[in-house]
Amino acid sequence: MSKNRKILVVGGAGYVGTELTKKLLNLNYEVSVLDLFIYGEKVLREHNNLTIIKGDLRDKDLLKKIIPGHSDLIHLACISNDPSFELNPDLGKSINFDSFRPLVDMSKDNGIKRFVFASSSSVYGIKSDKDVVEDAALEPLTDYSIFKAKCEEILLKRNSEDFVTTIIRPATVCGYSDRLRLDLVVNILSNLAFHKREITVLGGDQLRPNININDMCNAYIDILNQEEKKVSGKIYNVGYENFPVIEIAKMVKNVIGDDVNIVKKESNDNRSYHISSKKIYNELGFYPKFTITDAIKDLKNCFEKKILRDPLNNEFYFNIKRMNSIKLN
Ligand SMILES: NC(=O)c1ccc[n+]([C@@H]2O[C@H](COP(=O)([O-])OP(=O)(O)OC[C@H]3O[C@@H](n4cnc5c(N)ncnc54)[C@H](O)[C@@H]3O)[C@@H](O)[C@H]2O)c1
Picture 1 (cartoon, rainbow, N blue to C red):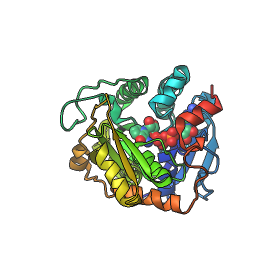
Picture 2 (tube, protein in one colour):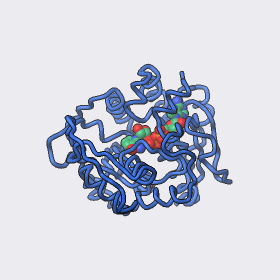
Picture 3 (cartoon, helix red, strand yellow):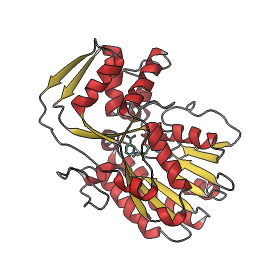
Picture 4 (tube, rainbow, N blue to C red):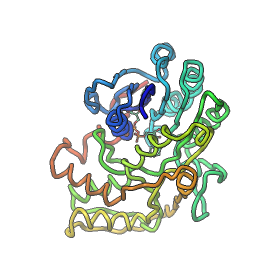
């Protein structure tokens, strides 16, 4: 399966990238990771089949040097949430958008056969439809989502028989990673429940689609393993459980402990997001195997083992805090 495939994971030292890289290595793929290592240098362990490249995807000379020799590219690198993007919109645009076209063109011209792009289900904006499907109109509300949508457009135009492109629109990811994010809904609630024994839910009826990080990684791997013609130029939502936030809070309490107090407060933001992930099941047979509860259990396990340093405050677990502190240009 992994013969003659060499995967370049751009952003492979991030929350999803770290776990994806481990899984690819376990499957005997040769992997290279290009990352700025904003969230720490030690998130990836050395491995005979892993090449680690510390660098900036905006550096065209570096890209020209490292892309040849790879067959597949998974693009995850990003200023990856709205608040971090808004902290410095010029920086956000330069990483999330301006660098995208050169990366795609250089990939196409230098032997990459398959290019998989991590977009976001936030490209849909807020929809009243029950299950938002891939051909719904895109109404992105923030610069982060607007640039994801624009990148999708650029990539689809480059799709061809010898440059197979696939776009993934993930739900919010949850669960443990060696590069942990504690600024995503399930992870936030689990962290507060474990360490403060209290969680506050604003509103609570809003639906939030989530996907366990194990399934998220498996979806990228599944795309790589599909026949080219099946995934060529395709877009897939990847989510699993669309639950109201209050239900997520109850799941957290169930796992973390009965003593956890859930405080419900009024919210004037009752917007719901809900996506359908039927297309990837119908077309590729991919379905999630891990639940939100599994993710909470994995987080609880890591909190109990005390492997995190200062999980309520440490900037490495909160993208906006980290971006604010490093002053990247
Ligand atoms: N985590 C989620 O819930 C979620 C949901 C929807 C979409 N996504 C998308 O999935 C992808 C991965 O998300 P994540 O949660 O792992 O994000 P993350 O912030 O943990 O990882 C992003 C990685 O990109 C690297 N990076 C940033 N700028 C770079 C640059 N200029 N050059 C090289 N590397 C750079 C960072 O160092 C980091 O390791 C992102 O594109 C994100 O938009 C994530």
